Image (cartoon, rainbow, N blue to C red; front, top):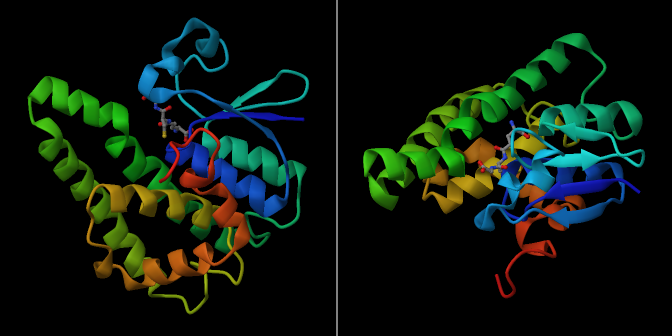
Length: 215
Ligand SMILES: N[C@@H](CCC(=O)N[C@@H](CS)C(=O)NCC(=O)O)C(=O)O
């Protein structure tokens, strides 16, 4: 069985959990306690020299890193249901929307960036929250406009795909950082459609074994 090295509240781990659940692939879960700095331990850096979760460890011990690359591997290995459409134009559009989150929003609002802002600029929690809120809102405004061009239950399709694997964890973060989600009704409709599915329920942070009890 493959092992997912992740953390309950990590949005990049959450993306991969959704992809696994959509494909019905069971893995063993190994928690890397980010609060305790386990990602910087020598035993973990062997798995991922970047010191990030998630890592998907294959049965032969190969370590796959980067959530989008892991989802690409899963999509190529367990083909149904597909996370990406076959048609080139739609494929490019879904990848572009996914990258708004994975490349342009998440990396500048993740916890290590926030910790750096707190430590280096003395802005405290309020400053770090405001920073995250700003960049999430900017990206969501663009995605809301894109979503407005389609009349589908998910961003551009009848079924959840790569984009939804990225969106739902980002919405989870947005709520934590106090983003006013009422400004994004199309994104909220996609969020609601995803939340009604058992695969998304299974992948939720609060349903993970390493989440604190009583969330
Ligand atoms: N681009 C990477 C980002 C991974 C990432 O930022 N992981 C965060 C949790 S969501 C992490 O491990 N942070 C630990 C740290 O910064 O020390 C991916 O998509 O896998």
